[in-house]
Image: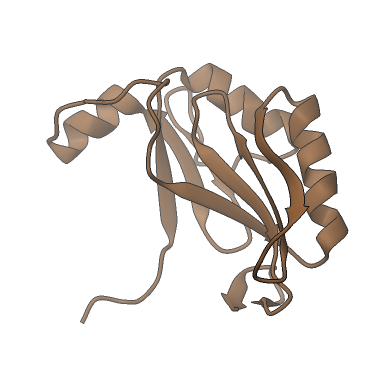
Length: 143
C-alpha cells in the first residue's frame, strides 16, 4: 500500500538564487539542509524545496520541455484561518515583487481566494475555506 501523504514538494528552479531570494523575501526561513545548490523551506505540513531544473530533470530521467515562461498545470496553496488573511498575504506578496494573477475575492463555494505567480511562474493560491480544519502545526487536515 502506498502511504496517503505528501511530504516534500520540489520546484525545479531555472534561477535558484532568484527563486530562493523571493521565498526569503516573504519571510520563509530555510532549514539547515539548504546549500548553495538546494534550498529547503519547512512549512506547516510539507517541506518545500528548490532544486535546479536541469538537475531535477536529469535525476528523474526526463527531457526538460518547459521554460520559466511556460504554464505548469500545478498550483500550490497557502490556506489560512480567516478571510482577511488572504488579502494580507497578497499585499505582502505584491511587495515582494510577485505577479498577482487574481486579486482577493469571495469564491462561489463560500471561501475567499487569490492567485499569484512567483518569479518563475509557479502558481500559488492564497485561500480561506470556511470548512478547513488545521492541526496544532497549522497543517490542513480536512476541508
